[in-house]
Image 1 (spheres, rainbow, N blue to C red):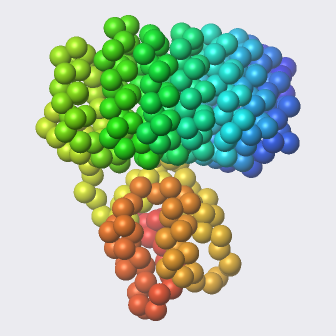
Image 2 (image 1 turned 90 degrees about the horizontal axis):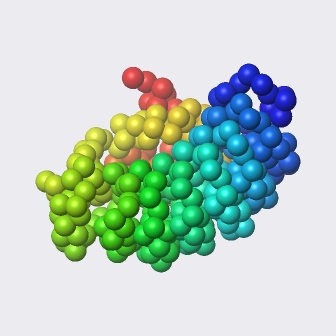
Image 3 (image 1 turned 90 degrees about the vertical axis):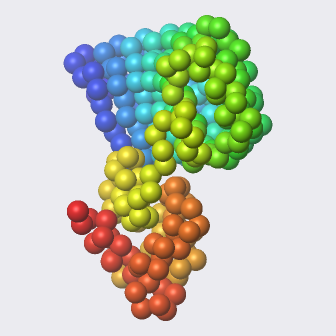
Length: 304
């Protein structure tokens, strides 16, 4: 149907459990459909094989403007394949790769792609296990890229040094189009703050989000209670309660231990610190027996 599509411009296939067995069909649809402009494949089980196939399809696509691959399992060769396709693509404007596992290898490949890609405007690679090294490798592409406007690298373990490398690359590139950098939940130091003050003179409309609440940075960190933050996280990522609870590997109608609950929060990549996790577990462990009935959490998540 997608291959022969002459009408549909936007298709949402989120949460359909597509895995690598769907590689040939989806890749052919992307590369051959000239009408399709917006494709959402988030919350599936896409991994390396399909990631590689999609990369080749992206390189051949002549119509796709926006692609959402967030919340999949793309790592290793799949990351490199996608980045290679990005090098050749001359149409794609928006690419969401958040909540995958690109790591430093994928960040390096994306950096190489950004050196030659001259159309992409929005790139989301938040929650991708990118460290300081990966941020530095990605920054090499930002030193010459002239089209990227918005880069989201939130909740990666890249520390202040990684944020500094990205911002320095933007500063050193006179042709940079960047006006928004998202480093949410990454703590920055005074060196970063000093660099930002310098960059603001060069790019007055630049917005940077990060952990530290300095006056010159916008959007201070939310002080909401952990349950509210969890609801906001689910809303932001379009997660239904039952899909969120899949991260806890439940045995039907049985409570779970606190440690397993905390591991589930980690697997779901919920942005709660240790203290917030502790408060949430205290709220749910009403019997103080070290076990949590997730049916109670499900009711709280569904309540207003």
